Image (cartoon, rainbow, N blue to C red; front, side, top):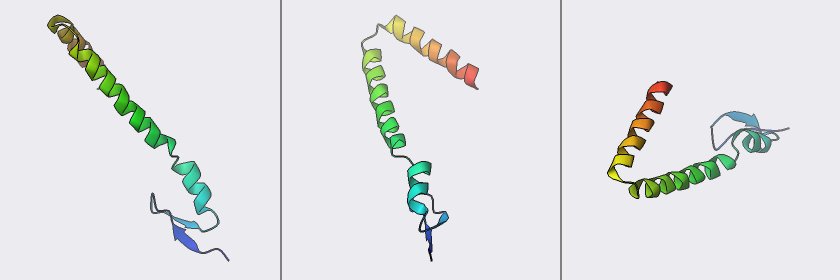
Length: 72
C-alpha cells in the first residue's frame, strides 16, 4: 500500500505513488529557467539604458512610469 509523503517543494501530502507526477506537473523546472532568462533580459536592458543620452534616459523613465501607472 502506498504511504503518504510530503512534496519537498510545497509540503503538501500525496500518495508515494503520485508525488513524482505532482512535482513534474505542479513544479516544473522551466519556471527557474524563465527566471534566469528574465534576469539576463534585465541586464541587457540596463546595459542599453547606460548607453542612452540624458534626454533619452528621461524619456524612457517617463514611459516606464506611465506604464506602471496604468497597471496600478
